[in-house]
Image (tube, rainbow, N blue to C red; front, side, top):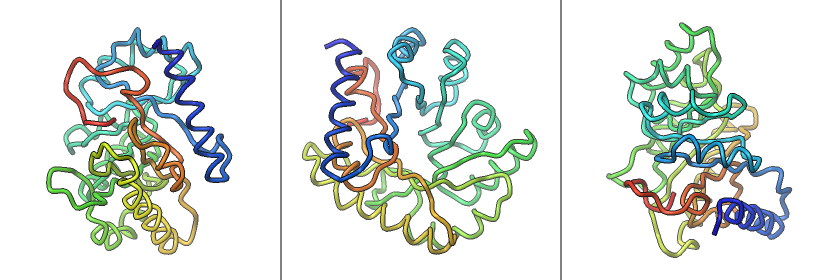
Length: 233
């Protein structure tokens, strides 16, 4: 199938999932995961109307983003090292993978230097997997008030990558857990948090049914990657 066919199929599936959940399809943003995709593929996706793209490696983003249309919006979705925070702040409009207080403090410092306010999501390791990055839920709740006190950061919600499974329904408890964690954070904040970034190519419909506002889709849109990547993205 062509890129256009893949996009049309994904959009139809998003609409159907929203209908099942009684949600407005406009409440779900499709983030195209562009890792390992060359600029010409990103441009082709942009010509089909996509505007929101994600990258998970800073070096790849530094090389690629300048070659893509200026109107595109970019989110960082990979593990971020503190020594790459300056580049992340300059390249991206949101960082979805903040997973520690020291990382948040470094982003605060770099955003202050850039005179920029940085929207972020807190990445949660919902299943407690040793092989994955992300906050342990209890630690995030303990440090949440300190993070929201950082003047240059705006916490917009939570992000998670549940364990890969060929059975999408098995991801539902993890998506539900992330939604419940957001509700706890909203109580601590005393205000709503607009975003839940959850759901990838294999399970985004379940994620939408559980409240996802951003679904991160690569393989279902662009096809299988020639290089390695996170299974199921």
